[in-house]
Length: 357
Image (tube, rainbow, N blue to C red):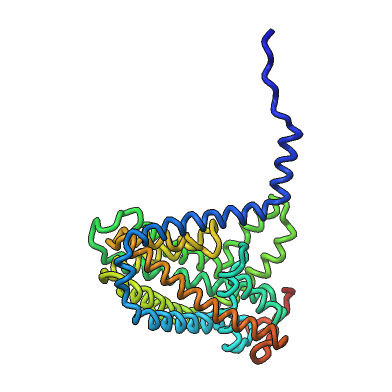
């Protein structure tokens, strides 16, 4: 008599799935920590095979590079304020700058998917009582910054020697920029909300539609003024130039200079790769992206790893400043700067509108 193979015990499978669901966040955290550890071990192994590069670093250039990144952060904070003012949020620059650094601190120390941008949005919303305006100003500030990075990469890619970089990566740089421009236009015109609202209704997520409408109103309002957009673009170009300049200083401190036509597009791609949420604070992802993309333009793996690690340490320097600001605010138990003035949302037609945030 042939014994029939036993079926999988469905109750055991259901219990296993329930266990995974109950501890999903913890499991995802450990998975991301594991990915970060593996990627960092890979990059450190590359550095270990090229210790001569590490020993020959011109460390005198590193403080200057950090100073440029600090200036870049100040410019970004001012850019954030331009968006906030379009919705009537008169937030002092000192507070914006402090909160920007606090965001960098939490981006580095929180072992969760909550990033510094979320911390900035929550901090501003709690100070102003205007959730949609605060959130949209943070998202637009970050988005325009990334768009400018992609734009710089796309522009410099036009001067690449034919065949010096694989064509798919060149097309990717151009695609990121054009896609970003299209996204900003769609947000400004309000073309995204309708399809997304319809999708939310179809997925029985209608409770989010009203919040989405408030956010879309804030996007439209903050992108409405051509003068403000020009100011934001110019500030973004300056911030990007400072950050790229700092990274190029680190590169020249570690290895021989490379043409800007190759450097800028590859750093643009590496910066975009940092957004992939598979690690903690992009730990390991950023470093691996530097190794891969700088390798396409002739930088050795060991040198690229050293460059990436130095840039990581500079980021930790920003986090330290943010930690000091956060500690100071916590100990004083009052806002660290002047109070925020948040009047009714500004209506460019000349009529103030009050809407629920």
